[in-house]
Every structure is written in C-alpha cells, then in structure tokens.
Image 1 (cartoon, helix red, strand yellow):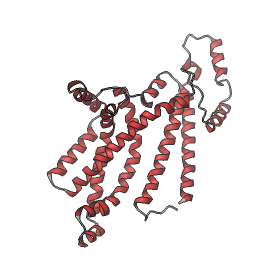
Image 2 (cartoon, rainbow, N blue to C red):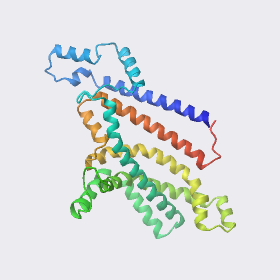
Image 3 (spheres, rainbow, N blue to C red):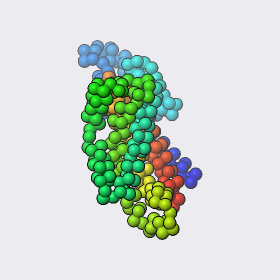
Image 4 (cartoon, rainbow, N blue to C red):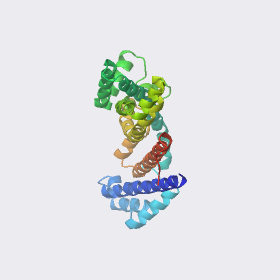
Length: 305
C-alpha cells in the first residue's frame, strides 16, 4: 500500500511537470511574447528592454531551465499587469472556486445517489420514469441557460435569492444548483445502473434469503459494490465542476479563479495563466489519487501491484 502511494505521488509530480512544460510551450506557440505584450507601435528600444527584463533574450533551453528551477520554489513570477506574485493571485481566488465546486459536488452526491437508488429499487414504476426523465433533462440543459433561468425565476421574479456576488450562504444556492445539476444527473443514472446489476447478483439474493431487511440489503450489500463506478465518475466530474465553475462564476459574478483566468488570458498575463494550469493539474492529480485509494476501501479485493 505504501509503495503504491509513493509511486502514485511520483506520478503526480510527472503530471505537474508535464502541465508546466505544456504551459511554457503554449507561451511560445502563441507567438513572440514581446509582440503580444506591447502595442504594435512600440519602439524597438522598448521591445529590447522588455525582452531583457523578462529574460526573453536568452536561449529557449535557458529560459525553460530557469522556469523549472523557479517552479521548484513555487515561484511563477509576477503578474505582468498587477506586478504581484502570480501564484498568490491564483491561490487567493482558488478558495471561492473550490468552495463552489465542493458545494456543487456535495449537492450532486446528496441528490444523485438517493435518486439513483430509488430508480433502481422502483424499477418499472412511475418513480423511476420521473427520476430518469429529470436526470436526462439535467444532462441536456446547458449550464449557462440553467443559470440564467434560476436568476430570472428566483432572483428577479420571486426575489428570494441574490443573483450575484458572494458573502452569505444565500449567494451559494443558485451557483451550486447551476454547477451541480449536470453531475447530479450523471451520478443518478450511474447509481441506478449499478444498483440494478447488484440487486440481481448472488450475494444479494443470499442476503435476502437470510431475512435481512430490504433497506440493509440495498444500502449495505448492493450500493457499496455499485459505488465503485460512482466514485470514479465523481473524481472525473471534479474536472467538469471546475470547468463549469468558469461559466457559472461569470454568470453569477462569483469571485473565483474562472473569471480571473478569463481576464488574465484576454490580457495575456502569462505568469498567471501558467500558475493556474499547474495548480489545476496538481489538484486534479491529487483528486485522482484519492479516488484510487477509495477503491481499496470500497472493495478490499482490489489489490495494487
């Protein structure tokens, strides 16, 4: 187990290195950084000054080496616009984004798993039809449209909830529903399929033959085995949640990393973009590691070589 964890942590470092290299390469694939940072009518002297100031006059392999050395110290340089440390700017705004994604994931699990179990246990009933219809709608509705409809109904017409900003728990409700609906539908459909399959298995029939209560059979014997693919999809959907947060944050003026990165890209603030790419890669790699470790807890038969 310890060997597996150490090997996966080493793989996390490889993933972060790959993401950092990709972010560095994209800077040059987008053109000469100096031409991107200065206006077209900038003087040759100004271009040379900027090139020397940021080390763009050095060979590419030297710039790449310095870039990696700085990364080992957590130094992504300073923002080209605000001249503040890029990593600090990203980490400050990562908190609200993780808060929104976390609430979206909690909303999806709290609603999706019971809905999937209900549809599986009541297979062929009106409850299954209604649950799966709502799940299909949840996966079909675009995030931006759902957000705008929630603002229109609950913010502008009923005036129950704030439609923008952050500061109280009420500000979280509409963005959480918006970002979590698609994941809720995915979890509900996957849970339903897994539980139906487990309810037909021999060990569930044996549990029923022993006279165990139906709720114990479903939640202890069927749902636990069916939870493995659900845990997988939860880990994979975290990336979708973070991506969806970019749109949701824009709609609800949420002070997260999504809107900040969009502004940084439009302003060609490369240190901020590079820091964001690396932080996201590290975060997703760690989440995948946690998901893989969860397999062992859910199913002790799983062994890692």
